[in-house]
Amino acid sequence: MPVGLVLVSHSARIAEGLVELARQMAPSVPLVAAGGTDDGGIGTSFDRVTAAIAEADTGQGVVLLCDLGSAVLTAETAVELLEPEQQGRVRIADAPLVEGGVAAAVAAEGGADLDGVVAAASGQDAAPSAPPPEVSPAEDGADDEERAAASITLVNPEGLHARPAAALVRAASGLPARVTINGVDAASLLQVLALGLRQGATAEFAATGPGARDSVARIVALAEDGFGER
Image 1 (cartoon, rainbow, N blue to C red):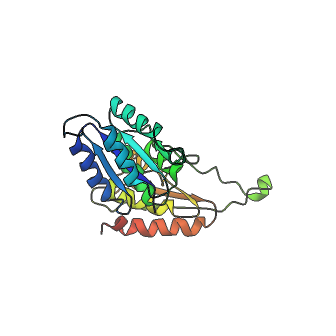
Image 2: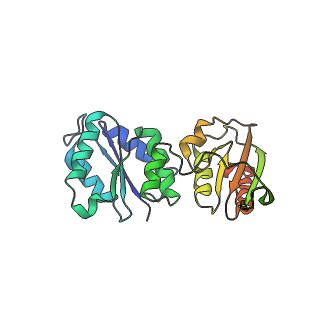
Image 3: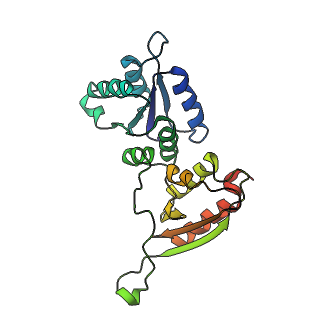
């Protein structure tokens, strides 16, 4: 099972709406809203957050994302009062609720572990943002790592918006090689979206590591199909 997510907001509607949005791109991830007070007002509830953690925890860990300061305090208190064996697999991500929540959900859907989901929420790169310059083994005597690259013109009418970007991220996350698009980590939703690639833009894919050529070929095939939008 994937890592679970708890979305903590002062508004129940915001938390529930974000669950609905994220579920479009991460259907198998346990997504639990913990918004509003116990009586349905604006604020946060310790009991709601605690119950949400229990509901989202399938054994792979839980990541909490919060909107405003007091939501963070409520979440921290809830985590501090968990049983010791559960505390180690519950983390609070320092990330924006909406963008971070969607990015974390996509990473969890792609099979990322607890650390990977937290990193995805904040837009961090698990590896350097671009592959090292190509050097032949003869020049340094040691560099025999497989590399591959390809360029493609984006066909998606709305460009690389959330859904196709999520499809790219899920695909890149499951490949043996590390894949970049225009120099950023193709497994990071926030970095991919930040490129702002529109229809007709050139996407430069590069891969480094085991199965690099096959990894690039798979991503190119996905891109040619419009990342599932054609």
